Image (cartoon, rainbow, N blue to C red; front, side, top):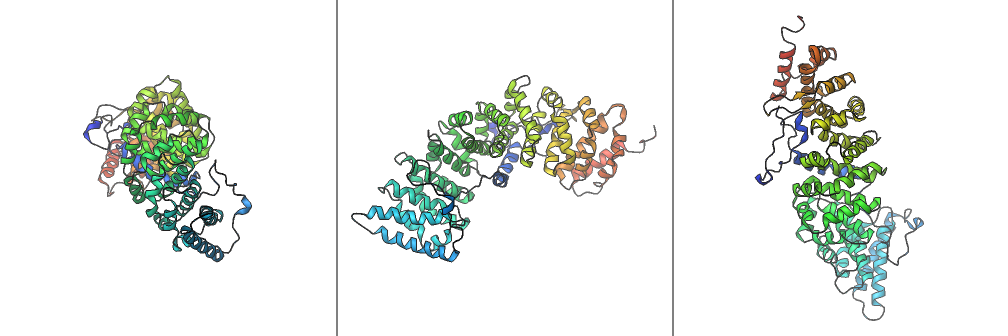
Length: 529
């Protein structure tokens, strides 16, 4: 087993040049921290929905700062017959068309009124009639209403209509392609803040649809003006821009994340908002950190050397808001996995920030939320693979019994993360060709705490990575448990039978590993003493 501490230099061009701390207990599996973070970035969508953070959002109430009255709950067109609603929408689009050519006194007022009528239909029904609006030809008309020289009121209403069309299904979102150049143009400094913010919302909905539309937005130059908006002094504008940016940079191509972190002021604004902003704004900024740290090595390197880690830990410690805790914890986990500097130089043992990090992770391990438990175990496993001092710190904390309990009772993905941490607490890497040295005190306490059956269950898992982790732990027990009692403990928990399922397994590595352990510890000599 390699200790995994070697890492290619950043200049070598390898996408995996950051050490993945987990390598303390295992070698080739998961040695690539970067690919793990990217794979996780792709999986966030589902968890984001669980956190009620939808990738696309219907704009129902006016932006703060507009004169329009707020939408009353009672205004929702819930009971209206769908057919009637669609007919009204088609009619509204017809009026949109005829108002375009109106001239003279009252023309501007009429344009705004017909736009507002369509916007009401698209924002006040439970299921907005987006399809009917598109079929009636709304998008090309709305593009004309976005033309330069139009009043702010007209621009705002047109962008609002487009925002809600973009919140529809994938094909409906794609219908916005002709509108993208003007939506991006209106993000510029010459636009009013309200118009720019509404256009950012529309762009965020388009970006939330998928990689193809993201690349079109990026090619048309959406990143820089959105980044500028994120530096705004107006809270809601910053929040909308940060949300749109998190959709725009979510990959899988890391180019946008690399570009964003290079824009002057972005890191400072991130720090400022994590430090001072309300939880809603901090949540959106934390999602930006998640995607930056999932995709960009350059971003990780800059972020871990800023005050962001300290601020994330502070938020994790005090907040009870799940929508905020999930991205804060994920971002922290990415940083801990992504750059050795984070554990070696930021989370140094004896530092109050390190104690706060462990305390906040323990809080998440105790949570009822599955995502928090899994993410906290993942972050903890990478800290546990740091120095011997880090191992002692976690071992002596409340985390150890909690992790044993999770290993025995939690859902499978959480059990696996807990097992990594417990395994890492028991080993200190030796030379690259040597098996890791065992910390006997930790190993004995973890076995006595009841963890062994949990690891043997992992050996029985159909997931090869988990089974390998289980086998590695059994190797530690049989090699390192005092007075040669390890093999007997393993046998007592039916560990031999669990290992023998690999006797003729198709995976050569697993077959050799399991058969080697059975031969070494349960060969002809076993039981003679």
